[in-house]
Image 1: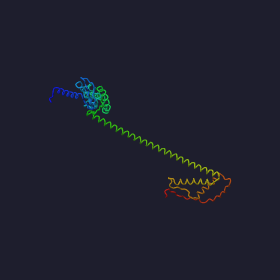
Image 2: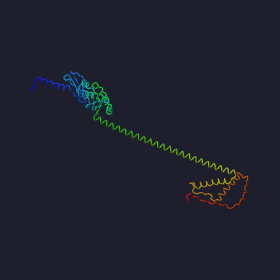
Image 3: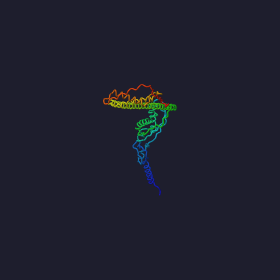
Image 4: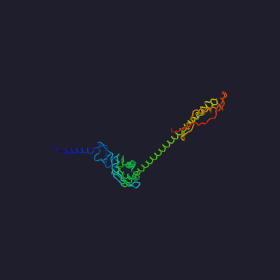
Length: 336
């Protein structure tokens, strides 16, 4: 069957409709946003999925990636507040929140964010000393994040993180810092050693002090007990003397005989045990000792008197005879 003119027109219309449908159907992948322009003017933003536009009147303006992206900041030279030159590089993370603002508020979005980050790195790090710069990276990161995020907010961008990756001081400065650190550690070690020696001396002094205190307290306690013992002994002696005195006053001659004999025996013991006595001459006859005690008793009776019993008659004096010398006993403490 031959194709006539009307058939060709119908086929052409069908093909045109198919082309129009394909031109009006747009599929947006997840993580992207498409801006739509009508006659060159922004009208709306297409969300992920299947979308329809008016062919030949509307077109896709920009395809914006709204996923979080990483921007590598190259190494740059920074002059610190104390005129030290260091090299620093960083990394920035950002995300497009408003596709239309990111597409039409700034041209070349990544380059703008990169230059803004580099400029603020020099400003923030240049306002700090080298020591502060090396020890406060978190402070630098927070300040950079706050400044850069505030600057890109009109572009519909959210800077989520800015991190300093590396800070490299000059080699000679690194050597000087190493020597300084070594000197500081040696100083700290010497200080700790001195403090340890001082604490040891203090502890030894405290120990000596406590020992002296305890020794003095012991001596005081010993002296107190010795004095108490002497007091008890004196009280016993006084009691014995009082009892003997009362017995003598009552006319008991045996009491004074016992008292004098005890003292005589103690004196003899002291003489015999003296260190400076090598030879001692003393009467050793028992009859002489008893006679002495009897004589002392007679003297006591004459002094105190005895009303109940008459005094015994005195024996007649014996005729003088040849004088005899009492035997001499040699006493040697060494047993010779």
